[in-house]
Amino acid sequence: MKEMALFILLMLIWTVAQVFLKAGMNDLAGRRVDFKFFAQALTSWPVLAGLIFSAAGFIFWLVILSRFNLSYSYLLAGLTFALVLVASAIFFKEEISPLRWAGAALIILGVFLVSQTR
Image (cartoon, rainbow, N blue to C red; front, side):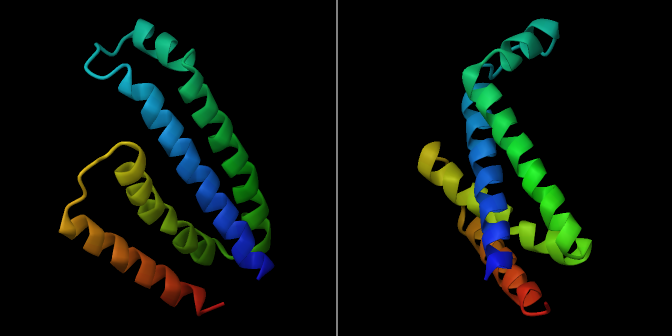
């Protein structure tokens, strides 16, 4: 059970990171990519929060890698893709096609199958 708690925490942290990064980068949509673009991105509080959450996730990822096989860990962390899909629909009102939902369901099924191999 402790094992799953580590993975769940990692996935939640990485999902929150992606939501913050996207929220910050929405303000720069359509702008020319140059030095000013990156300077504004790196001084945006949502982008900075996203980077902090990404760094925290990286620390948890190091802990996970020290305890589990890479092949097992990476596949379980793949559930983050499905969580980001849900977060995109909730926070950004993105329209998710049935095919994307089906893909997320397959990811969840795959993670379930992989989790049974430990």
